[in-house]
Image 1 (cartoon, rainbow, N blue to C red):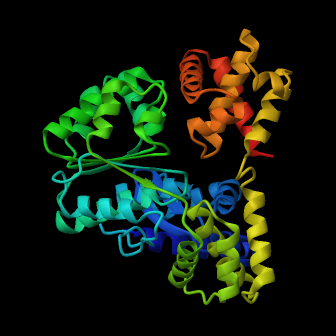
Image 2: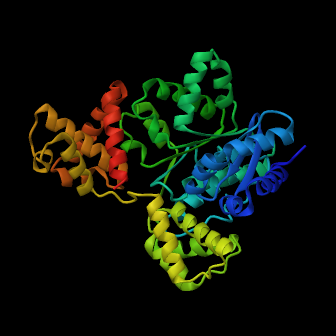
Image 3: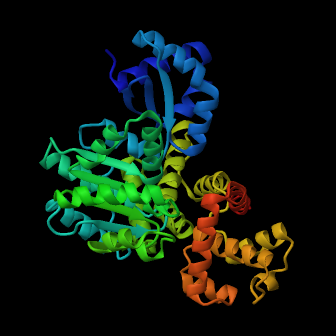
Length: 431
């Protein structure tokens, strides 16, 4: 019987024989096996680009190799980022060293959230229940979730820990309805000792989903079980969130995570480099920290890319090499910082409505829809608050909230409108 590590080693040996080291090794650099579960062999790739290349170039060959080695049909699943984190937490009974409180870099931007998470890990369901952590994407919210889980695993090995994203919760609920498996679905969540849910903002606009999660929440809370939630915004700013869920979310402790300051970002870069065994010059550390300001995941990606170039190509780690590495990351992830002006321009061109009309007081249906789409996209793609969006569109912040809530409800009912908004979002992010 192969362990995940031994299986990946065997796969690489065969692939090198079949395809040659030059074609194989660069794409499996820093690949880490996670688990063998059911008919899947789950492997974490070094970046999104590496994951996509592994899927496109190696899936068929690897599937044949692992099926032969294991004596049963098996498929590779290449994952990255949050998806890899989820697989690790659900499949690995040991502590995953990458996501502990000791590995979490604390600064002014996240000090309170870190302290709150540590308090929950030390006294689950006694101090802060639920704990609601909110902040922008890639700032370390999921790291805190897993740090809590890993800490409690050490203390209570028999703890039933469930991690889920709100969209995955919805998909499982839909599947349970189709297959008459609601009893098992509810038992999975309502019998947990610790429930961790990421991205609860996606409960927005889905009434049946909110209804089911409310009863799950109540069942756990009444049983004195710990609940930890994350979102990109506080409960009061989640459009169409039911009053009773908002009340429940706000009944515990709200802790925000903000963008890290320069000093904290530099500490994060140094820590990641040390973990990878890379000696990174101070001017390179400073360059990365100064140019990637709003996303911890991007910082880690930059360090991984530099480590990969150094290991594969033997290139010395200096400032020119770092500049090229970061340039590549920006190419892979376009549209990192959409501005309100970009969004206004894109919506204006799509609906053939002048910008000054969208930001004006016109109330005809076409303009109102374009204005609501603009408000929604600015809220989704930037970190701006409702009052800040209101200033740009010359609207009171309550009007902005109402507009976003109205559009969210309409999108839930109108697939064509939902597709239009999603297409606009993709267009803006690809600029």
